[in-house]
Image 1 (cartoon, rainbow, N blue to C red):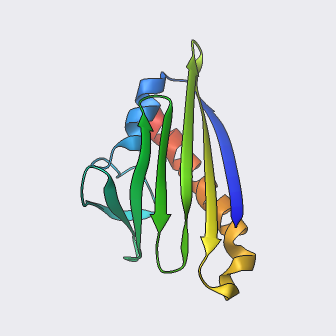
Image 2: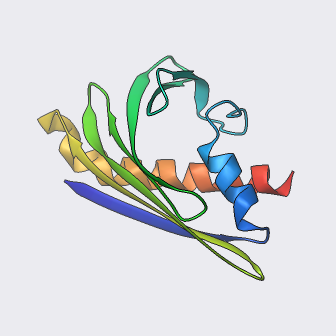
Image 3: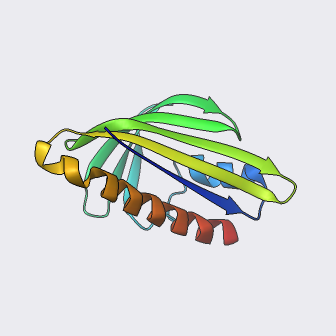
Length: 131
């Protein structure tokens, strides 16, 4: 299992960051996504711009504090945890991904892939928060 985490600070209130991250309807800020299909209140599918699908099942929602879900596609399965904390100056987030590759050939590349995806997500989120 590969584990990767990333932290970032945003100079805005926690509810704005929370609303952007947890919205399944407004995802245009994500440069890697083509669409999101909502299956139920607890399950959704993200499609990359190339149409590659990953299914997410929400396992915990504690508004403006914590959001967690299980994720799975044909290449991996894992768990994502988002921790949100705010103070008078802004919002800090920490996103932690724990992923197991389903294909042996992919195992050496999983952590590098996670780091790249997390960095892109934070870059996109910084732009979205600034709007």
